[in-house]
Length: 415
Ligand code: AMP
Ligand code: GLY
Image (cartoon, rainbow, N blue to C red; front, side):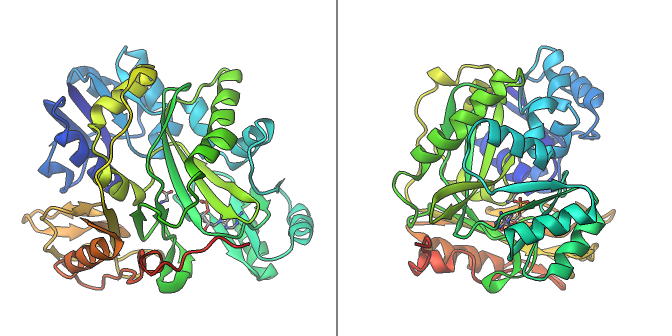
């Protein structure tokens, strides 16, 4: 099988490693890719958000399967353009990707499908925002209504800060605060059949103990030994199946990766957000544990044959990934710093690039993530942090507490 992977971040590097390891894949092409992906794939330049350009590339390389990593191309209709050429594509249509692209659309689908989620108000004026903040009370949750790369949400107990974020965004969704630990559940679907992957936990705040602003994600681990035994089955029944049915009923079936971001509240799992693609950095840990060949799985989802796909199999043990971020991230990151120690197994490249002289340099906020597996969570943590110590990047920072509470058995669901 010839696979074309679209994207250039850490998620795509993790996908590339798993796709390249699938014996069914004889050629892996990535566009535009990054220096880490170049270790396992042939890179081609492309503007990932240009549907015609990606479709033309898929035809040129005679791809049997196109896998679209990031949300922006999906929202732009790249999957539609590839399918229009008769090529199998893993990734939802533009119409279905609105589950991620518009918070308000996602909320309307959840309401129609009776999916458990936070109550909310869509607001377009300061008066509406003030009324919604008063209705729900603190802590306040104010979300930009559009794609914001994981940074469009402010959670704060300060009314002034909530109002300021709303004013900056214009169109916002104000919602009820959901207490409880967060879980990311990825579901591979062809629109009808849904195969859940292993739940993972992501760390959104920049600093240890969840201090500081939100980021795209600073680390992740799996499995979640503390989660209720019926979690996946319950989320499939209460959230995934009704959502997929509603999308089919609307004439815009969702096929691809449905990322369900949940809070495990005292009232059960409730949806914080949907995304239309694999999460980053959770993908790094989930794929490190997935034994089932990835290309075959994604091809089955892309061709509507998931119902006859064998059950997924997993390696035993645990996986931990720690993100190494640039100086100043998540504010405007400093780039161009030289990176050493990053060309080894387990180092997943996100914001890296090659300088003219061949040196590897930082090129974004989340520069790389370091992934390791182990017999259990403490062993995987120790291995991941040892690997972080081997990477050098001037001014870099990372969290030191990824998976720490879980390793100590301190994650609890509020009663
Ligand atoms: P989102 O972009 O919707 O995933 O939000 C980013 C982060 O903000 C989430 O991972 C949560 O940590 C937090 N968040 C968003 N919505 C809520 C909510 N309703 N209650 C509590 N925390 C939230
Ligand atoms: N890890 C959060 C995201 O991918 O949106």
